[in-house]
Image 1 (cartoon, rainbow, N blue to C red):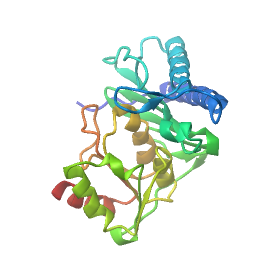
Image 2: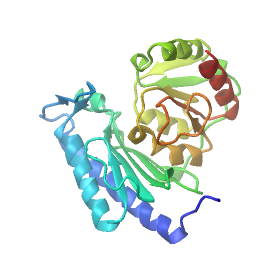
Image 3: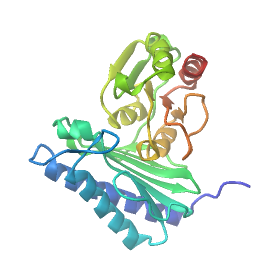
Image 4: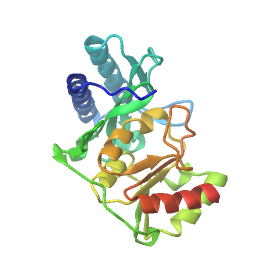
Length: 265
């Protein structure tokens, strides 16, 4: 069965809400950024703050008001109607470690999935005033202007980002090391901002592991609309049950080369 596409009017309504949600997250996060707050540690050893929780709750309230039949999957609160045909996937502050340490490269991730497939995504990095928007069937925009991933023929010319080398363990660490030694510049840090840079043609590869659906759902429409390729390490499209290993390339040639190294290691 062919996958349903949203009508133009539906996409406009969904996109309007997505931008509203990004504005909410921007307002709340900037209110607390570099201020006085306590960072707690969750069960998975990651930090969380009042800003994360307040952002997500206000975003959920806006969704419930606009589309009460839609589901919500977020990082900080329980899933709501996760089996609905339309599900919003929220990460109110991607890069909380950066946020709590005063580093400006954190961001909000907002996605809308239809039947399990992301059709709309926003990467909003408020402290550096960068916003990427991806909508199914349309070119991605960066601060309202079209943007495109760049071509890169070989790994030897590639700039590659990962948020941290410590996200790779066991077999993954060995596979990543094979790729790291083949690229021109392996770089670390940046969280969701890295994916926006790739969509705008400044970075060639982003490779990460341990990612949850709220970490990657918003990235899919943004990157695909910029002409980039996003997959798991075997080259398969991402799905809600993916294993959390993410590979993004601006050029199919280096995507193929990276898959050979990561999947064959």
